[in-house]
Structure formats: structure tokens, C-alpha cells
Image 1 (cartoon, rainbow, N blue to C red):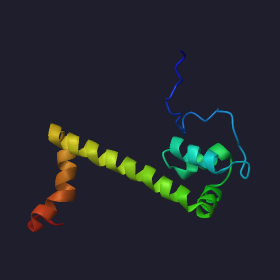
Image 2 (image 1 turned 90 degrees about the vertical axis):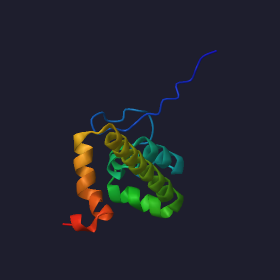
Image 3 (image 1 turned 45 degrees about the horizontal axis):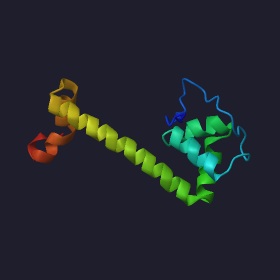
Image 4 (image 1 turned 180 degrees about the horizontal axis):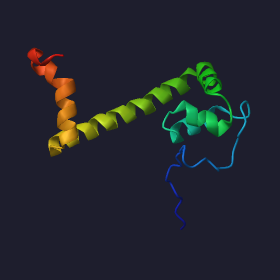
Length: 116
């Protein structure tokens, strides 16, 4: 039995997408747009480059299908959650950069005397 490769393709600014599929604005559908948003981690500029259209065209398409904008917000939110988790782990490991950033950004909430 052959196994299907389930690794998600990611759109990267360093490696242009060479996958088959629609390449021109207006020649894609909802599912193409959703797939491109997912592979680009919600980055509109990369989706626009994939479809060879302007970022505004992508935004307009998302206005036409509000569930796509909601899907994109979820992707971007996940990235933020991952970044916060990694920052927290770096703090727990005692990494100097994380401690310095944490003190600059969060210490004032613990002790108002530390405010700028």
C-alpha cells in the first residue's frame, strides 16, 4: 500500500511556488484561495504573488467570502500563539534576550515604579 505524502506545501518568498494550478487573478475559486492562504500562513502578499495579482485583489476576494478572512485570522492567531509559546520557553530556559525583552515589556505591569 502506497502512503500519500501529507506534508503541507508552504509558499515561501525564497522559493516561488511551482505547483500546478491557477496563476492569474480571476481564474481561481474559493478552495484555491483557501489552500493558498493556508500554505502562505495567511500572508496576503505571498498569496497575491502565487496568483499573480495585487494584494488588494486578494483582500477583495476575502470580502466576497468573509469565511476566508475568518480562516486567515485563525492562521495568523496561531502564529502569534506559537511565538508567545516560544518566548515563554526561552524565558524558562533563562535565555538572556528573552529575559531582557520580558523585563522591558512586562515588568512595569508587576511593579508600576518600573514604568518608562
